[in-house]
Length: 115
Image (cartoon, rainbow, N blue to C red; front, side, top):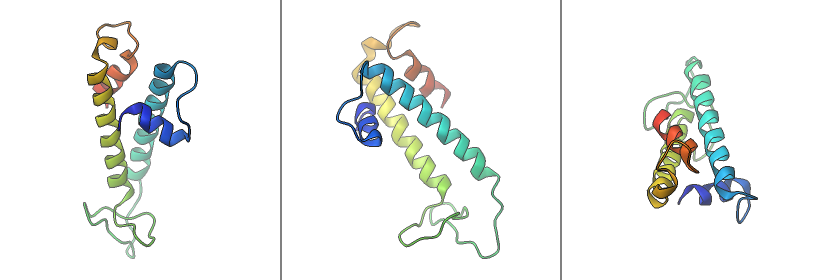
């Protein structure tokens, strides 16, 4: 799955409107910013004595529901890895659009370096 596919799935559309690359770039950077904010929020959560722990890392599950076995942290990490993989795949497939400082995919190239 590449970034265009993830954008379409996330927004419930078949294709991004207007300039596809600009829309996807803005969406990817927004998602990365949201993930960073959520990570900071989760770092502040204190463990309560009756909390359930994540099966992957032992972090506190902030929400317990049937079928939820990963903490928000691990879910964010998984989503972050999916975004990184999609960005790298997009850059690999369209490297010719990310070969300078003023190019179509520069914001994705910079975001992946900053993530």
